[in-house]
Image (tube, rainbow, N blue to C red; front, side, top):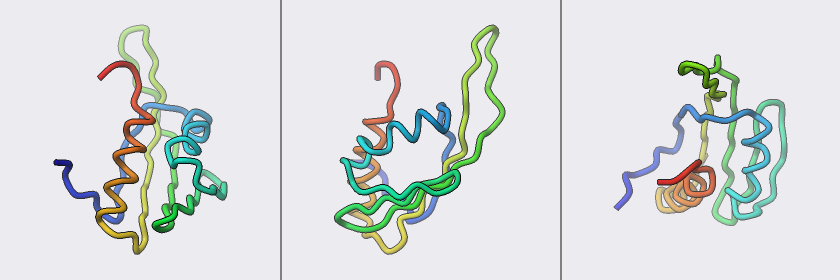
Length: 99
């Protein structure tokens, strides 16, 4: 069982804005997307999801440089069940390497 998904939360993601923008259509199951400055409005069948992101300084580990974004998720009035379903698919779709 997955923990409940809050209606609004923030998380750090290890990607560039361009990578996140490329993932959003598939991560949202091809829901209509309205692109806004440093964000997106995703109209799912169960409600609106708004994403806003800002670029964080890259994380450096020896010679490895990892991009980072701070991403805000806002599910508005979407039900807890719908939020959970959206995030389960979103997280699986955007997962990198193994797991």
